[in-house]
Amino acid sequence: MAEALALFVTAFAAATILPLSSEVAFIAALTSGMDTSLAMLSASLGNVLAVVVNYSLGFWLYEKMHHKLESSRIGAKALYVGHRYGYVALPLTVLPIIGDPLTIVAGMVRLHFVWFLVMAALLRIGRYYLILLAY
Image (cartoon, rainbow, N blue to C red; front, side, top):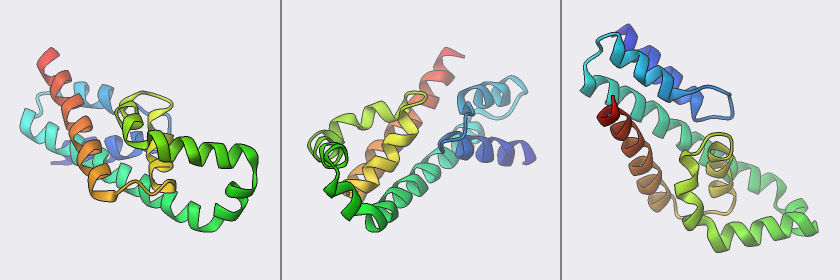
């Protein structure tokens, strides 16, 4: 059970802006003999919960900074692009480096939370499933 908690925490932390790899932790858990269902559940739940936190952070940041963003040329352009391409960019959230900040931007541009959650969860679960198949 401690291994499942460690995988959950690592997957959660990896979906924030911390430079961690949940994929490496997932493979390590499988290699150590962790049950595949438990590994999928732990990694997916941790990762999905973290993107919900990221979305919430973006939502909160927009509340605090929207005047500043809208009054700056670059901020206004970023918001425009985020609103226009927000859902199209969601598949990019599984990529390293740019993916996690995009989940924050999703909150800032106020993508519909249910659609964001469904898409983000399917992408994350799908990523772990593909790793499991390749393993």
